[in-house]
Length: 302
Image (tube, rainbow, N blue to C red; front, side, top):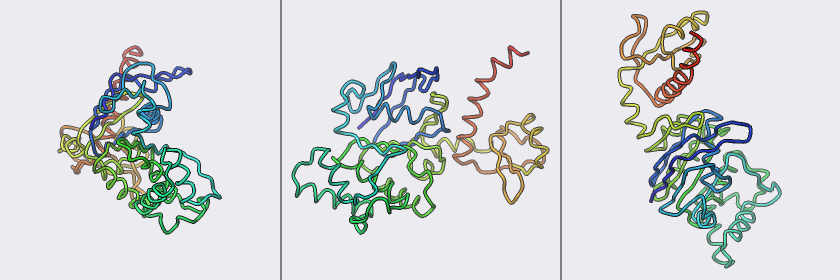
C-alpha cells in the first residue's frame, strides 16, 4: 500500500506558492506532515482528498491516479478536515446513519451494524442518542473520525485533529488514531510536534510549500545528538544571542527565557548540552530554510 506524490505544485491566484515541487512516498501506518500555519499542509491534504486541483505533478494511491480518477479515490478515502460542520440538533447515530447512506451502504440492517460498530470504536456509543450540539470538542473530533472510517477506507487524512483539545481528549484521540493506523495509510497533518513524536513512524517537515526533511522521527532526532545546547538568558540579552548563535527556539520557563542553540560544538562555556527531541529537529529545519531564503537578500544588501 503506497501513496506516491511526485513534483506537485500549486500557486493561488493571489501569487502564493502553496506547494512547490512536493515529492513524498507514504506507506501504510501513521505518517506525520509537520509544518507551521501557512506551510501548505492543508493545500496538500485538500489536493490528495480531490477537493482542489494541482497546477502540475501527480499523486497515485496503489497505482490509482488521484488527480484524474476522483470517484475512485473517494471510494477509498476517509477525510477529517481541520474544520467541519455538524447539525447541532441531530443525534450522533442519526447523522452517522445519514453519512453511511451517502457512502453507499443502502441496506438498513447493514448500515445500523456499521454505525454501531463505529460508535463503539470511537467510544461514542453511550452518547449515540445525544444531540451533536452538546458534544465536547474531543467528542466532535471522534465523531469526525467515525464518519471518516465509513466504507473501510485505505487512506485516511486528518488535518490538525488535536488543535484545541484538552489533554485528556488529546490522549484519547491519539489512542484512536494509533489503533486505526495499523493497517491503512493515515496522513496526520499538524503543527503540533508532540502529535507526530507520539504517533508517527515516518514524517516530513514542510514550510512555504516545500518539503524540508523526511524520515523516521527517532532517526532524525539521532542526527542531532550532541548538537543541541541550552542556557537561560535575560530578556534584554536575547537579541544579541540570536545574532551570535544559531538560536532555534526560545521559551519561557519559570519566568526565565530558555534558548536552544544548534551547534556542532559548545557555543561557549555558559551553555550546557541537552538531549535533542523532535522539536529541535523541526526548529532547526525551519531555521535552515529561513537562512537559505534570506541569503540572496543579504548578499544584495551587502
